[in-house]
Amino acid sequence: MKKLLIANRGEIAVRIIRTAREMGIATVAVVSEGDRGSNAERLADESVVIGPAPAGLSYLNHEAILAAAAQTGADAIHPGYGFLSENAVFARRVRDAGITWVGPTPEAIELMGDKSRARQAAIEAGVPVLSGTDGALDTDGDIEAIADEIGYPLVVKASAGGGGRGIRRIASREEVRSTVEVAQAEALAAFNSREVYFERFVTAARHVEVQIFGDGETWVHLGDRDCSMQRRQQKVIEEAPAPGLPDELRQRMRDTSVELARQSAYVGAGTIEFLYDPQRQEVAFIEMNTRLQVEHPISEAITGIDLVREQLRIASGEKLGYTQDDISFEGHAFEFRINAEDPENNFMPSPGRIEQLDLSGGPGVRADFGFSAGQTVVPFYDSLLGKLIVWAPDREQALARAARALDEVEISGIKSTVPLMRRLVALEDFAAAQHHTTYIESVSGLLEGSAS
Image 1 (tube, rainbow, N blue to C red):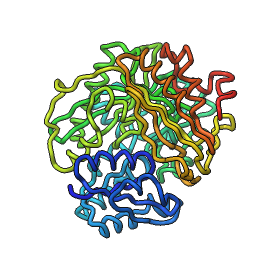
Image 2 (image 1 turned 135 degrees about the vertical axis):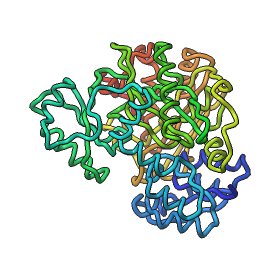
Image 3 (image 1 turned 90 degrees about the horizontal axis):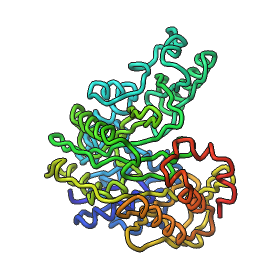
């Protein structure tokens, strides 16, 4: 691998460029007209403007990205997360063009991208799953009877969904038919597929996941993470390892995740996502993400393994060179997603010029940001500015370090979620790991006075 094109933007593009440069690999940033002057463009060895600001005309434009690779002589493409990272058609086109795709095979992306097929693969690998339909729901059949058997509440999910989208809750038999129809319409609009399936709903669930890695011959896990602090199914704070899991359950989750990767002949980085039911002390498979996760830095923090470096090595044809016994886990880490949003105004995006952006530092603190002071946040993309990651020898010390680090962050000119993060990290429920995936919505007054 001589020259790597990063088919993404923002903090993840910067993060990939940094590791590639350390490895002696030249980098190409592709930027839309709205991202001219970005940190990614500044740090890369070369840059190519691939189209207007709207993502459909730039970061999702297959032809423009492949043309940029040809123009610059890039021999590899890293998709980051989001955009084209789980697009099997694009991955196949990259491969067919003789360019190295830094990610799993298109076949693995297709398998795990179909959530009902992925669920069946998980069952075959011994991964625990929630009660639900095996495969896509036959909506011409007696779907009310199927829902009755699973029990209420339950959720209907888009088979081609992901990222918390394409999910609808059903509270009673009377809601089944109409909710399924709405979910099918949403699935068709978002994912170009009407297929949906049923799954038992877990009240006050926690969201936990396992980071896996494979080279086609050897598979390992890099521990687990908890991503339960969410707002409307979008992750806000993540931590590793997941606190409060029974040891036997944690080990089963890790072992079966590796087995799913093995049975899928998986290559590269992937994440197996689970719901954890604290009342029943059960975990159940949600989906597999066939890409690098936003929260990968906390797995790096507790293992000392650079996941992007591993992705680039494996994509270049190298082997892992280590086994599970060689991986050790040290300390505790948190990641805080800092968005350009106004928590006091229903989390409305807050585009505009960043007047001030002072980030924290000190022992165990890492800031992965795609922006600098003086740059403009445009309204065309996800509102993520960057991520603050903290590590300490144990969870209690990590929480204290997180509170200190968040207090040091100053952002002005736009609204941000930093003040909300400060409030969340100070909560007794968070310190006791009593939060869950709907916690933010359930706590009255939590958002009052949180924005700045």
